[in-house]
Length: 150
Image (cartoon, rainbow, N blue to C red; front, side, top):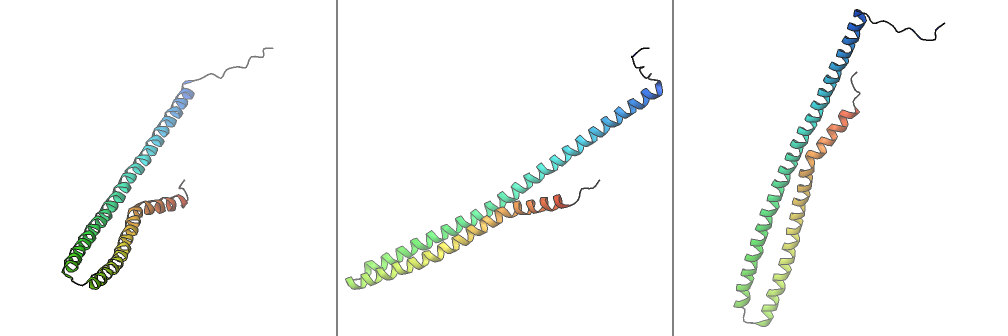
């Protein structure tokens, strides 16, 4: 008695079925690879749009801060020139000291208001620049929390 197992013979029908299974598996693999690529491509395009939106928001707010800073510089310099005109017109030393104290007090108050305004613009800058990223993260997590379709 021989211990060799008999090999199943492959007939044409079995060969055709095997070829169909291989072809079917290959097509499914190609379809899955294409679907994965399309998903990655979609995410990449979304990221480009996200970064563009964040950059635009950042640019707009930075421009606001720059313009506001220039406005403050101009106001402060004009205030300094006005003070210099008044100071050099004064003839009494006590009046000069009072004028200087008043100017310094006004400038300190002005600077507090200006710093508060620039702080508000900076907070708006951070919020606006991060808003597209925050929306994207929220959207991503909400889509991940949905059950996957079979």
